[in-house]
Image 1 (tube, rainbow, N blue to C red):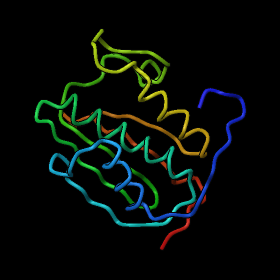
Image 2: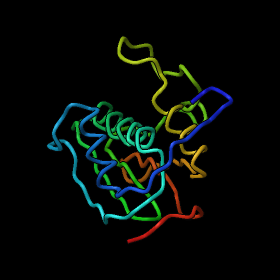
Image 3: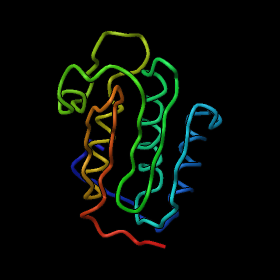
Image 4: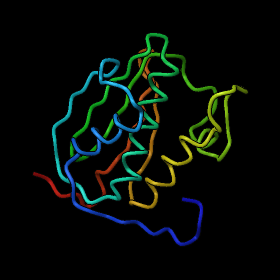
Length: 149
């Protein structure tokens, strides 16, 4: 991700395949996740994009008081939503490598950095907003060419 080569191995895949890979990477079942997926095809680096989704879901579960995440996905946006406090800093702060809101023993502060860089490499926008007690992390693919089913 950090090298200047930025080589992607893009393949056409279904979003549901990315979601399943993400769950496999987390080594969990989907019990802590509410899912509203309108399956679609996209052309991405499957491994990197699976890590993006894994990082977003993992953070949502880890930092939510109810250990629950909601995933909403269609061919324009992927949203991972969870209850919790609003971020104390702008999203840019959290997408810097090795940033952590508080010092903790789990993780290195690279999760959202990887999400941001992978989104950039694919031509997607990574956004955040807070609404009604919920954090919304969004991969916006609306201005990117995706293949819809």
